[in-house]
Amino acid sequence: MTERFVVVGGGLAGARTARELRNKGFTGEIDLVCAEEIPPYERPPLSKDYLAGAVTSEEFLVQPREWYAEHGVRLRLGTRASAVYPTSHRVELADGTVLDYDRLVLATGSRPRRLPLPGADARGVHCLRRLGDADRLRETLRRIRRLVVIGAGWIGLEVAAVARNQGVQVCVVENAPTPLAAALGPRMGEVFADLHREHGVDLRLSNRVSEIHSRGGVTGVRTVDGADIPADAVLVAVGARPEIALAADAGLDVGEGVLVDTGMTTSDPDILAVGDIAETRHPVLGRIRVEHWANALKQPRVAAATMLGEAAAHTEVPYFFTDQYDLGMEYHGRVPDGVEDRVLVRGNLSSRRFVAFWLDGDNRVWAGMNVNVFDVSRSVRALVESGQPVDPRRLVDTTHPLEELAASHERNVNPV
Image (cartoon, rainbow, N blue to C red; front, side, top):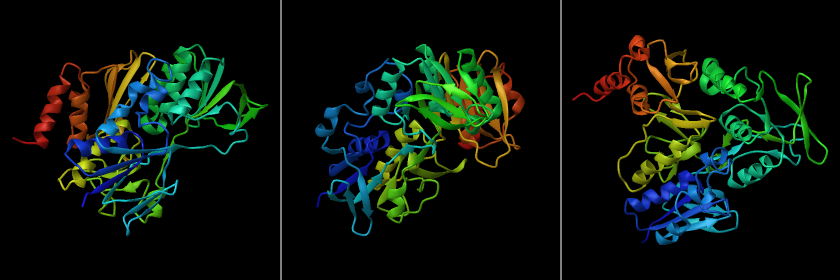
């Protein structure tokens, strides 16, 4: 009997899973369930090049449209899964279709967090998750003078940079005392605060929006300190929530995300999870769930191998990147909650050409961030993956090649 694998989720993680299955020689049926009406695409350009008008949507499709038909992948566009029945191995779709499966992959991604604010549903209030969101926001930026961004996370700051480059006045309101406080901490958050201030962004930190004014469309926002900020449009960028309801309702084990082993298998041996929803256990960093492009890109290879009975494990450290104005950054690793960390800087902080390392009390590197330095990514990753203590003095000494320090740790982890 021909096997059928069903993949629920039409983003990068879902599309890559279908591709990896075919690359590994799977000849059975593959159904790819996509909530959007268009084939799967990558999301990072939505807040960067696509929003700026530098690329077209066709340029960041995961695969060309014709790939799916050519490789026998049945694209089910414009519908979503409404229920999973593990006992009978069936998936019910919102349009009433029922799909039998031998193996199921959940790649349902995330949805933007909403704010329960007066005026939050007004015309001119945007979020940014899908291509349609980016289209609306891109058109808006072409015709407005003033944008308020609620939230100084990665999406909010990337959009602020695009808007400023287009001459739009931008005010960013953030509850924390620095941008990116949760991701980077106060010292590195100040690097991004200074960057945006230098480009004319009005940062309102340690503050919150209490109301969005609307008279048919956005006219401004009011903050909790009583300030009124005029605006022609508002972007709400306060993070995302993983779409785990489908998994939870099916009885799978969930935490912050859907719990999986290193082979991406859930508590049901015939159901796997990849991408934003997958909560894995990393051998160095512990239990983690991250909403980064790199996970959606690489976890499917492991999931496909597992589905085909091959031994595979996802053990790479998290990775993400950002581009804002003339700043390019890559980040490897993650600082777990509860770890007392300190930040050491290698290079010149004031010129924004440096590598920052987050160390715990035992001098182990939990994370590294290279800013406008692009020949050290492999070394930074190796130091995090090793889980071994480093000499802080050698780490920040620019006369000592970082590659040599990283190589010594690779030898410690993988002795010859």
